[in-house]
Image 1 (cartoon, rainbow, N blue to C red):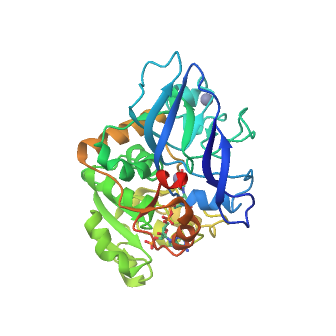
Image 2 (cartoon, rainbow, N blue to C red):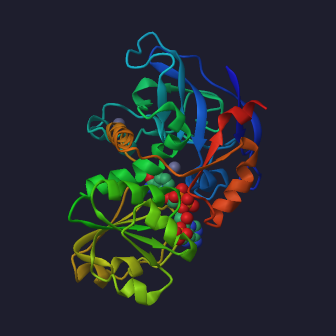
Image 3 (spheres, rainbow, N blue to C red):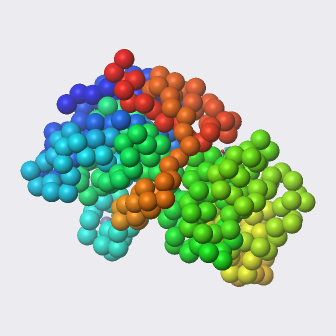
Length: 349
Ligand code: NAP
Ligand code: ZN
Ligand code: ZN
């Protein structure tokens, strides 16, 4: 089936309207009429070819929510009309140790929702800036929020799970002091989730104008990272830092804030490397520097259910599909409060 989408034909070209073909619904497939799709900084990195290996045309979008419009003969878990989501992956091998552990995100055969290898035309996956998507049922998530919250649920599918997974893995919760660095799409969800888990949350921002917002999002303390005295006041105090910054920066400034055995998890994925941190900054306090990539299907469902139960959604700014290029420019300036979401109905205009 041919559907309308928005995509880029080259890294130095803006996104524009494009017709794409979705495969026929197979026995284990779910077809989703996309209602909304969040705009992740990874979309920008990939559409503009900032990470190696972008395949064009590139239709980004991996924060997808909508309603089921068809199911294959062997699909039992979903019915036409169900509210569902699709995050950053649409396939994996389903039998390796990572898949068995419910960590399909780390499977060597993981297929991203866009820019992943597939047998479907045009040979790579095309994402959620489109009217419909067809996905194997294993990678479809159930949305239990109220239907009127649907647009603000979309960013949970990447920004939510990417911060949830390290917060859970490194045991954020009561008695833990957790730093969230960078208050953008990921960071604002990190603040909400860490707070709801019961941790003491310290937000770090390079934008003084975000102090009030960070507090409203749930941060107990907010530190302007450009202020060396404010940073020094938190030295050696944090158990865990989730660093979402999308650009290279001095990691030592944050590693110094960890207490003994503390961990900083990098989730931000800049296109050029960070300067190497000082080894002694790790050795002297047995600190760890780690990375984390999105999350597995079971933990994504767990996060969605937790958010539905606790009334957590993203703070969003709705845009039309034809506003996406301007939205990218604003995202580069950190001028998003705090996630753009495309109203997919605008694709039909
Ligand atoms: P975003 O909305 O643009 O937020 C990034 C935030 O980082 C900004 O709002 C800004 O916050 C801070 N920042 C500080 N200096 C910056 C600079 N020079 N350039 C850009 N940002 C700067 O981006 P996002 O969607 O949250 O994504 C953040 C990063 O995570 C991206 O690199 C993205 O590709 C990556 N990502 C990784 C995963 C994963 O699985 N690991 C998943 C999704 C996204 P302040 O104004 O508060 O300083
Ligand atoms: Zn993303
Ligand atoms: Zn696998």
